[in-house]
Amino acid sequence: MEREEWLQLVAWTNRWTPVTCGRRFTFAWSEIVTTLLWAVLHNQPVSWACRADHWPSDLRSARLPSPATLSRRLRRPELRPFSDRLLRHLNRGRRRGLLSLVDGKRLLVSAHSRDADATFGGRGGRQRGYELHVILGKNSRFEAWGIHPLHLNERPIARQLVAQTRLVGYLLADAEYDDQQLYTLCAQRGVQLLAPRQKGPAHALGHVPQTAARLRAVALLEASATGFGPKLYTSRRGIERLFGQLVSVPYIQLALPPWVRGLERVRLWVTAKLLLFSFVRRCRKQTG
Image (cartoon, rainbow, N blue to C red):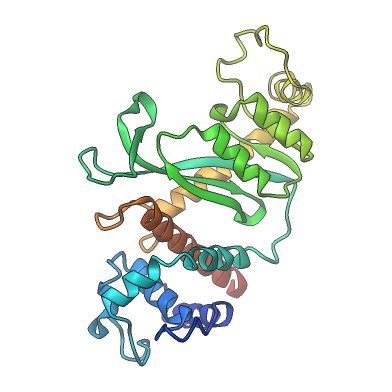
């Protein structure tokens, strides 16, 4: 992140984060969030950002919270609504298109980690950690997102995310989301889910009554005379590109460092990473 971009981020955070937070607090929420973002930007523990020698003199604020103060404030329940609101604000002004994508990105920890919230899951249940679930809209707009332990099934989580959004058009997903209930929910909200069948076209649909939305998805993906369905489905690569950027850009890297353990800490860390990514992308798009 460039120096000018960081200054813009600080100004933007001061603008959209509450300045006051009660008489019993010394530091405003804007100061707490800025210190957190500085630590996350440099992939360091939050205590690292509390030391003045870890800041350029012209970027450091007049005062910095102590590690104990910062840790205590980061555990406050008010912080999560603030951070979610900031991320949602970055997505304002982008038109909601007719195409959305849903997928998950695993955030793994060691199998021997003492993290009580990290669970085993994935293929064969041999991986341990968490999973970032995202519904991505037009222009990489984050429509909905969430962090959950790895053992949880993607389908009910996808239903929760869809229920939080106001999507239109088509929602593209992989075969893991081929779920009758998800098809029904999307249809009720005016969205057509497109997900390949888990067993593939070579197998019959089975004896269970099929929803009209699932039958339409099968027809579009497997029997489209014009090729519209398969061509449309190639757009799902967009979310794969996004995840590729999130794990490759030096200051983003969603891989969980050793000091980020516990569901709430993981949520806070990943939300901060998404904030940094969204802000830089917005700045560079405006200047480009």
